[in-house]
Structures are given as structure tokens and as C-alpha cells.
Length: 149
Image (tube, rainbow, N blue to C red; front, side, top):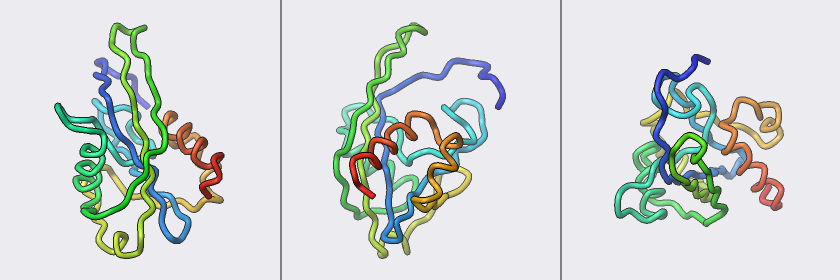
């Protein structure tokens, strides 16, 4: 991984822990480009919350933009607070939702952002731990520890 040539701007964001009926978890293989957090890592789908947008509106927009899924159910799960004050930035949050996709959703998925859509079975998650964006891995650990498997 190459060092950043400029600092990234942290923002409030939403992210989705997405599961399938086959007990798989969906991740985005993040592009290997400068200007994004954790390029080349596996991450949860989601993104920055827009101006005057609610967390839920941002989630719906991001999932539609990134995966072309329009109708899905979601549940609130966890909010992570991130303090960037040591580098002169503000505190932001990353709100996690859980989306349990149904087969109809899976048939209509079209990846629109990222290098690849990666499906990982539960039993394979821990061997890939160091390939997952660290804060997404932490949220996933909390999710799995809360007996959602």
C-alpha cells in the first residue's frame, strides 16, 4: 500500500452489513486508487451522508447507487464515533445497518462502485480479517458476537 500524498476528509457515513439467505456476507472490494480510505481492502457498502440527508436516506441512496437495489429492509445496528481531532479534524460517526437480502434482491444486484462484489461465507470471514477495512471488521465482530449468525 502506498502512503497518502494528501489527507482525506472524514465525514459522517453509513455502512451496511449485508447478508444473504445462503449465510454469506457481501463486501465491496475497494478501488486501489488514491483519495479514498483503505484502497484495495474489503469494506461494507455505504458512504458519506449528504447535506440535509438522514442516515436512513443516505443508506437507501448508497445501496441503490452501489448495488442497484431499490427495495430492501434494514435494521439499525451500531454507531461508531471516530475522533479525528489529533489531525485537526472533527469527530464523525459511521452508522451501521443490517440488510438481510432475499433472493429477489440478489438477482437484481449490479455492482456500480468498487472493483468487485465479494461474497464471503461465515466460516471464511475470520481468515480474511486483515483484508477488511478495520472499522468495518470491528462492527462485523460486534454483529457476529450479538448472535446474528
